[in-house]
Image (cartoon, rainbow over all chains, first blue to last red):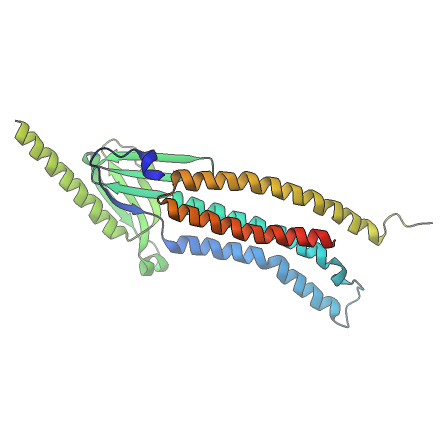
Length: 189
Length: 75
């Protein structure tokens, strides 16, 4: 599973596992739902038009019902697979905050996966950005962790829930880590 | 003179297309499902949740497959 792949250090504690906000997946699910029902709506509308007395065409749609049923089932299966792909992408895109580091996992499609991590000692600042009415009311936004090493793009993720609480958690974990390290240095000196 | 295209040609073409599509969809579905299962079981955070998601995915997929197979048999 995920934590076996990450290979947490001895005594390393996972403080929080953050997935993207549910609103993100709801919006995409809705668009898939709309795509899925388009052929059904088209079939119903076409049937209604052909049944009306003004229709110039004399096509018996019921003789094609078997074909429609087959192709529509295939279409629904295709949409279902798209939804499964999207849910997988959503579930595997994750930020793991531990008491020693932040691990950012970005699943880009099924065969592209980026895993980045940095130690909390290298953390310089955490920026959050909440854009728009929906994001404000549902409390999600972009979180960006700035590190001393400079490469910041991989530690920026959008649609993360509760960005303020996440920022506070990361900064608190970083402070505790720094305090622990300075205490260890004093004791060894 | 017989017409070049009559009504039965379209249904014949769709019938052959439906057969081919069924096998193609089955192949794509198997490959895709194996990939999805690997990702959920390898990178998921909780095994029980991953297994539950995969079971739901396969069960709903089976409904569509059965619907396709039944429709194909009536064509």
